[in-house]
Amino acid sequence: MIWAAIAVLVAVPIGVFLIRPRLKGLFNKDFQGIKTEAIVGPIITLAVFLSAFVVAQATQTYQRANQSASAEAQAVALMSENAGMLPNGQGQKIQGDTVCYARAVRFQEWPAMNNHQDSDVATYWAQQFNTEIPAVLNGPSAIVGQVVSLNRTQSEARAARLHESSPHLPVLTLALMIFAIVGVVLLVASFATPDMRRRVLLILSFSIALLLGGVLILVEQLEEPFSGVIQIAPTAMASTQKSITKAYQQAYPGQPIPCDAKGNPN
Image 1 (cartoon, rainbow, N blue to C red):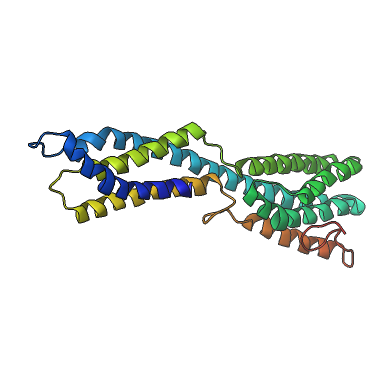
Image 2: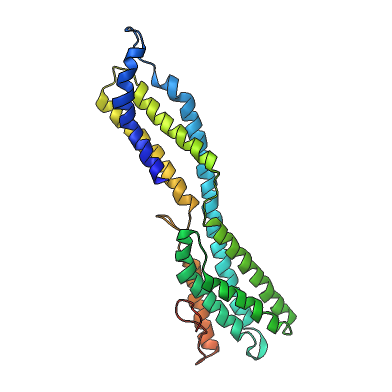
């Protein structure tokens, strides 16, 4: 999307220095220029409408990704807590798996989402839940039911987080918005009245180009919520990882966690 913002800026000198001087020969000598607002008004309306629509959609993507990440971290924390309530240490393996899963998500899957990918290590620990939870189904039904429900919530939240890591706006919508924005800048730079000084025209055109180009960059940042300048950090999962690690070490002193500091299986 940065290339589109650059194209908007490049449109200014094209309109001012290439198109505008060549338009004079197309009109009679008494022609004084067309008022800018008469030409660009409809296109500005279209550009603003499309920009508002696309920004709103991208903002929703960002918010859903943030909510999914928080819901996943909360589900992992509660799953570990409920597993600790199982009698006779039956939940130890599940608690160890939650610690390793949280580490793998924080240190491996989060960077992988910059390239719209997941982590095989995080997937491995998610699959371990499917192995360890059935082994405790003979425990207290209320606790087991909570663990099963939280495991489902964790799976759904992870799937939603991974889904939202990739852009989803229709390509045609983005293309139409970009063409509308470039058109606004070209028309402002090309059809301004002849009595407007070039310096003033350049300042005006570049101001509009910077504003509309900034909208394009904002859309890109919001559409890819786990990369870029305003990316969502694994704050919630980091907090969960620290708390459940401490709880595991207190509940099972001297017992090793079945993974290293980044979640790789021992």
